[in-house]
Length: 159
Ligand SMILES: [Zn+2]
Image (cartoon, rainbow, N blue to C red; front, side):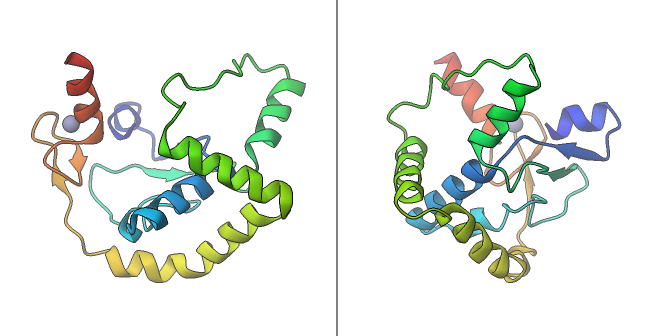
């Protein structure tokens, strides 16, 4: 996404992440004990600045997946409402189901998680702002590890 945005000379990248995506990511990071990953979340992504990063903003941040889908349906946007084929049985799907069950029993749960997170996010970003970002040894894009996630996925696909 950074590479494409830079090539298009974009200074801002808008993504479709919503309340469901964000609360799933938050809980997954929490369950894995990885708050460093959560520091990258929020309505404006990223904890670290890097010359190759294009600022990412999530305009649908406070909307549920259902609200986004309903709006797209009512506006007759050409959207396919199908589940990701890689989703069944994943940790994200299980966390999503857990959150949906809690939301059904205790309406407002997801908003509550988000509200709590946003109160600690500035401190979280401060804590991890000095981490170093390397360049992926394969594509040269910023990466937290030796290889970026895209290259890791592409290598997996080749096998
Ligand atoms: Zn790469």
